[in-house]
Length: 292
Image (cartoon, rainbow, N blue to C red; front, side, top):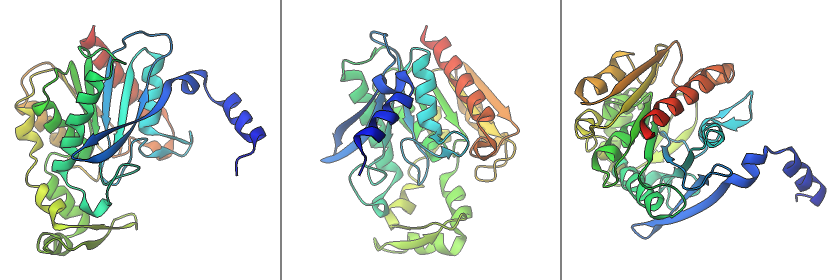
């Protein structure tokens, strides 16, 4: 149980912007509840806003940086709020605090959630619906490319961090060929998967089939707005780099930037905050430039 003294101490030690800005929000997609965190900058009326889409097995705060005790997306939201930019980060259905079991996850469902989140933002009355942007990391980058292509709301900028460009191939390499074949042939029964870092998950055939339904490179051809792609030369999840990031720019028409650093798939987060902060700052600068 949290004592009143401990709660008071926590509030006093929290950054002032975090105390005032963060709010848990929900909306419905296909009768299921999606949970998100809305971060609003203090003292800014009608701010621009960024939608953040998380990666495979992630959640809306994303990977915690050990040195900061803060998730990468939570940190980005806080830093952007300090610059006057609002954000919404969501747990896809079947992930995190949103409804559904993880085994029922599909990329098609994640795209639907991203589109619904943009709708919620645009209609919320809390942000400027004419100044919206999107950030997606890893699988969230693949999802983000599809959301950008299919959105009915105009996006001023899209940033894809270490984005998946061939999801079926990437997942097959991660899971192993035999497990991947088993998943495709499972007929809707959950298949147990042991991830490279030791965690165990279960997924159904719908997930494996959906990997072929979303082609980020094809999707990005239908988004003509400004595009920022960030990749790391030490990435051993989405590789080889920078060619895997460059291919999105090759098929995209419009203003674009390729951000390449000597970083891994999590932006060297286990070594500290320096590379993460550079990426957050560069992304915010790119988005802000195209929202003005």
